[in-house]
Image (cartoon, rainbow, N blue to C red; front, top):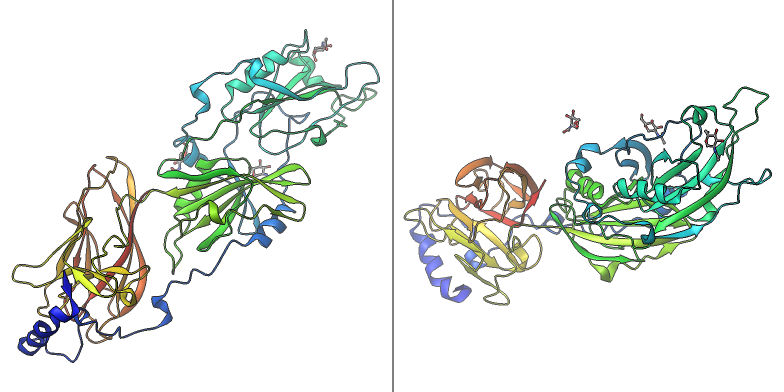
Length: 492
Ligand SMILES: *[C@@H]1O[C@H](CO)[C@@H](O)[C@H](O)[C@H]1NC(C)=O
Ligand SMILES: *[C@@H]1O[C@H](CO)[C@@H](O)[C@H](O)[C@H]1NC(C)=O
Ligand SMILES: *[C@@H]1O[C@H](CO)[C@@H](O)[C@H](O)[C@H]1NC(C)=O
């Protein structure tokens, strides 16, 4: 450990003897940052925009069902994004979910006793009329043999459809298409549970030539899975909390999207592909929840954040007619251990060292303190500690290398993003002109940045893993110092 006092005399000597004589007080001597602008302090002030979520939920329409004029046994459509940051859209995220899905459902088959009746039908008397469900998270429908009111066949169908938790079984009359298919007993399945309040599709289509009447519905009942299976964690994420009845009201908010069903993989895919925030960097956390408006499931919100939140901010239980349910928070797994250097705590005001438990700084041959870790809040992008490339004492202008102490637990063949913040704003525009940092992955240069004079800026690079990969940063040429902070490696 090097302390300010210990270094004071060494520094004065070094500066006097060095060819790099400047009037800059180096970081080792607690020199002042040349550009103390606001950019140094990340702007984390944006919190969840609940008003925008609530007002968008009031206009989005995600209700669907087994319409009279569609064919049975359609493949389940990909998850659809129905709104992004308050604007309605209609885009799918097929590839992201199909390849990533790890359904807990497929592990165990259910039988009819695993379902319970939510509402029963009207009967099939000549004057009995009923309605089918028009609701969120509709998946597909089939026809089941109508020799009996075949609930078991319908629930077996639900079991065969990934993510099905609810089935609506009903007769549809006056539909000639069903005569051809020899059963008029429809079984429509959903990945969310619905109630009798959502029996709003009464038929009313003229599908048979007159004088035949309009289509109508009879004996519409609903069955839900007794236990709603907890979703498996999306790849590259871990569950932080939930399910709760509160959504996060947290800082580092990046925006939201609505999904047409509760799909944690789709929300993870949105977080992975969300553009970085210039102040806060990459998406690191998402909060997925179901919006129930006037008792009816209406949409599935995916809110994204560049700061990891937890249950303590999951306090927004709703607003007006909107109620928050099934709220879960997931944080992106950062494979870098202590990418913010906050584990470096050899002092509580000012100190620096060439290594700690998680990082190793190495000087160039003949160099002195060319890669160091500083505990000094004014230099840090966040927290109290930060890494420095370039001789901390300005003793030489050689680059140093900062390397993780243990290889990353990467999976060979997978793609990862390397994320970090860099600042080369210590010495002023002229002296920082030659600032550079090589980003090293297994000792090979992935990219070299030559930022010149620049306050903290977020950088992101993509790499492919071979397994047990080693991340390092090489650079600095005092007085063209580079500070590096808040390093992460995320699976893409
Ligand atoms: C979304 O797009 C698909 C394919 O283009 C279309 O079939 C569907 O009706 C659209 N949905 C909405 C709600 O606009
Ligand atoms: C998505 O999947 C389709 C069909 O498998 C494929 O043709 C397409 O290239 C994929 N897109 C991406 C971005 O991977
Ligand atoms: C079964 O469905 C067929 C085809 O729609 C229909 O003709 C028949 O009347 C139905 N039988 C019963 C018992 O509802």
